[in-house]
Length: 206
Image 1: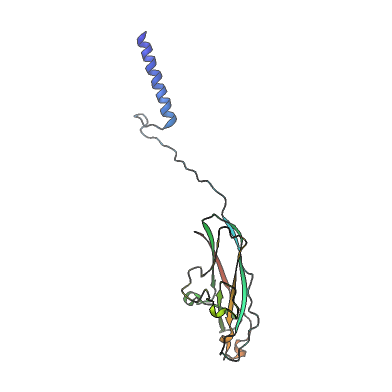
Image 2 (image 1 turned 60 degrees about the vertical axis):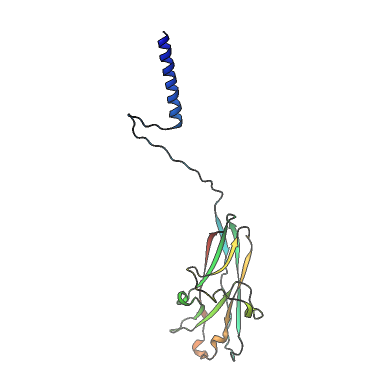
């Protein structure tokens, strides 16, 4: 009788131990030498990342005129705004904005230009871009974003909107020196001109 009680106690202990092992871990035995476990992890989504940057619909230098001399610069200007309309980003992030031109030689000289339309051999006029408001009073002390260095694959850096700056804007200026027209045959270069600026935005970590 005592022996039966001891055996019963041993069996009860063994069953209890088995239950604990089964609840906490998988096992490998001579009957089941192979087993598998599920690997888990969790990433909490703090919210979708999104942003909207508003760029100008167009830019227009208006009617260009040939200067009488090149003793001084004869600039025409076109201002534009780039606005952080929506910035649903994290505190360690920012949105950068770049600009590049569609000129065929932009990859080598990094210039911005407008080209004569509907001409077999179109005349091209270069212009500069400033990341601030520029006019005749301060252009001499301002630096164009395309004045030095080689543009990256996205073009030249214009501005960066950091976290918390939603609603802010960068005012830039396109500046064309009409001295480029001096000495040309007016009938040969007359007509409509156009070009294309490509804006590119990128989400970056700060």
